[in-house]
Length: 527
Image (cartoon, rainbow, N blue to C red; front, side, top):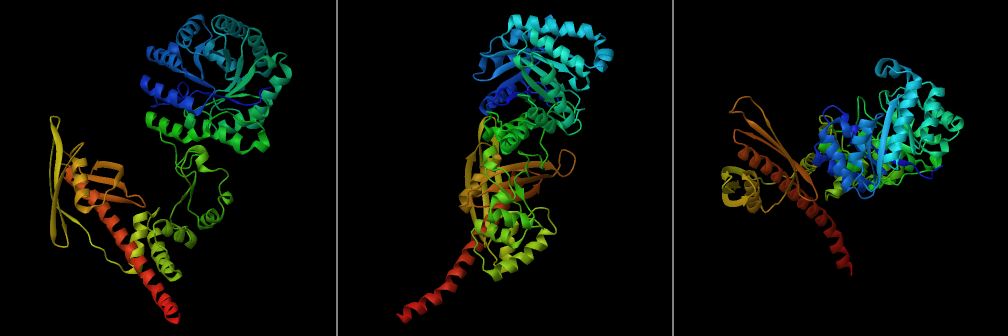
């Protein structure tokens, strides 16, 4: 038996069959490159006979691939197999993946064939594919609803014809872990030549059991697992690649076997699939979801501050995520609040923390998540500090496809007017740079969105942006009939919050130093 589990990624084939998830040829090439960085063993690049676009993408991926085996899918027929071989034959490691259904349901309603006819078709297909390609995989579609004895007969026959990999798919997500494990065990114990091929599994998630079924199959001897990034695929999707990889790695005590996947590329791969398909993962998605390493409950946050192992079974950096997050919300406690303020530069005394905590709880009761700017306003209120602000008095911009975009901005601060101009990649970029020049505060735009508040061509546009200033990030919002004006106002809103932050921090630190000074003077006087 193999000493590791082979990872067969079918994001480009089965994953792309998700409604609305279709990708262009260039998209597929980009993802194939990322899958090689992820270090998967096999990339199922597509179904060559299904369309000219699929054929071309499989062919181009096959030509470019450096390390992974490149597989193409084919029905058990000469025309499909020929088309598949035309596409994958350029790969350094090509594979033809042929399939035919083996369940009586499919035989009766879809194929309209007898078991004897299906057995012959499977044998003929594998024999022909093997005459073309040194690596052939066979899949018994709807295997988990097939008669076990017949399934075993088909598996034995295709291995006899040269199949290198035999896949036992749970095509409709019907089986349960104990049942699926028993199926794999039955085949290993009752098919005489089973050890001449790698036993593979391909699970769908219709009952939410795709990952559990795949892991059960591995425990019972399967050594290839077919899966997709983010678990995308037909209907409820496929087994999630990232969940299987990290389950095996985290629970080596149970499995004593691993994959060769570079787990630090899991999150980048997830993000790429999201961006290419537009299919976002839910916040609580295991391993790669927004909340996978986020903690809000006060007890959890306290444990995390003391020792991360208390509430995290794996480190976020091992899957490519920078760090865990302590989400400030109504369930957060004083320990987490003190730590967050320290990150923002505020070393609060117990009395100051208590004042800030009371105000923080009032804000947290009204909001799901409390952001940096909310915490800074809370400290400002707790310490009774009122910093100055800039106001946008006017803005003028020019842009076009034949001119360099420029913007002139006038800001008022404490009754004094300041003007400056800047050029940029567009009118918004120019306006933001002009504001930076006047205020001396430079931010990095990390999120930017515009939506129409009202209908019609004269609609009011509302701009939302998140601006990173290094130690803290702030949200800016504004609305106007002119998007450049709204963008400038939203950015200035964030800049003003940054200025509030610096003033509050400077004042607080100055007060803290002054409190220590008398004690220091007494010591000097005593000497």
